Structures are given as C-alpha cells and as structure tokens.
Image (tube, rainbow, N blue to C red):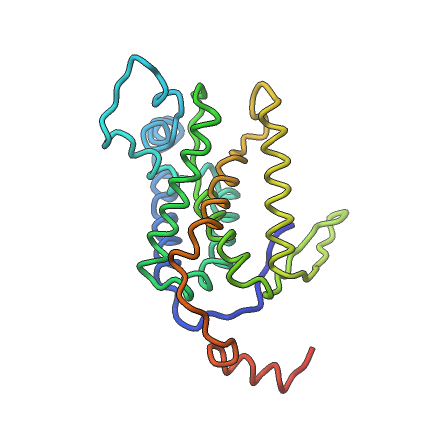
Amino acid sequence: MFPIQDTIPSRSFPLINWTLIVINLFVFLHELSLGPEGIESFVRTWGLVPAEFSHPNRPLVWWEYYPFFTNMFLHGGWGHFIGNMWTLYIFGDNVEDRMGKGGYLIFYLLCGVAASYTHYALNMDSTIPALGASGAISGVMGAYMFLFPHSTIIFMVPIFFMPYFFEVSAFFYLGLWFVGQFFSGTVSLLMPTNGAGIAFWAHIGGFVAGVLLFRLFARPPVHEERRYPAYYRYRNYHSW
C-alpha cells in the first residue's frame, strides 16, 4: 500500500520537514558520489553496526555512539530514499503544524534514536549496517495516527500491473501498517537472518516512540475550520 496523499493541508510552510528532506537528499547524493568502495566505507562508518557496540572487549565513550543518530540520514538506494522522503512529505507537515518547528525537530530525532536502539537491542550480534530515515518517519506516522485520526489517506495498490486507488481513514491505514510491521518483525526474529534486508523492529520502535512521545510536543488543537478556512470553503462549495 503506497500512500499518495492525505486530505489535511498544512496551515504553514513545513520548514523543518523540508529541511530534513533536503539534508537527506544531500547526504544521499554524497553517498552516490563515493563509488562502490567509498559507499561501503561510508556506510560502515556512519551506519549502525550493532556488533560494534555489544562487543565486551571494546569499551566505548559516549561520543562514539553517534551512529545511533547519524544512520537515520543514510539510505541504501533510490527506492529506499524516495519511499522514505515521500512518506515524510505526506505525514510530516501536519505533525510539524501541531508541534511547532523546534518541538517537531526534537520529536523526529528522538524517534529516530529510539528506532536505532530498538534495532540494536534485538540484533546485538549483527555485523550488517542499519541505515535509513524510516525509523524516525515511523514515529511521525505514529503521532499522525493519533493527532489526525479522522484524516483520510489515499493510497495505491498495484494489481496485475494496474494501479488501483483506495481511500481510508488515517487511523485505519496507519494501524494496519503497524500490524503488518509487527507481524513481519516477529517472523524475522524466528529466521536465522533477515533475508528481506528490512529493519522491521526499527520501524516498530520508532512508531511506538512516536505514540508515547507525541503528547509531550503537540500543542492544543485549533478547530479545523479555523485552521483551514480556505479548504473548508472549497469543501462547502464542492461536496464529494
């Protein structure tokens, strides 16, 4: 299920959300400029390799834990990057509206670190670098699910190479997404290796962090018709 758009417009320009997208873009373009060998070294330096932090013979000082933070700005390919940034574009602007710019930035980073730690806790012996913004974005999705439960998500499902579009409530869509991640994550724990190459538990950890933390950052809601007067005037004229 690939989300196309939601039905709640932003009331202000989502500066932090766009800044995060641009930073991720610059880092990804830098990765591509390094070549195959350079990318591998770059990913192992700035990505999260759990085994490097669980080795009993290698004591670390606090500043050496930077991969728990930096890995959320790395991506493994164009599909990975575009999928993550598109999802952040759809859900992040509204969450930023409710949290404010500073609060949203702190919330996003906390969810990303929580996702990193969740992945680390369940994969301590892994030597495979974990990277991607999806853990932090999962936290944004968790916040969106409860801040805008009556929003509608339009998503696309390809069936026999034909795109079909569906419309459901955000609460149902994101809840179903989380159930799918939890099921896949549980299955991955029963397998000797994560053959799909997807850090499902990072998604789960980020989502749960978002659900637990969003109330600390969200400002009181404003009545929807006061927040989006132009949108509601349009809806009152063009009903659907």
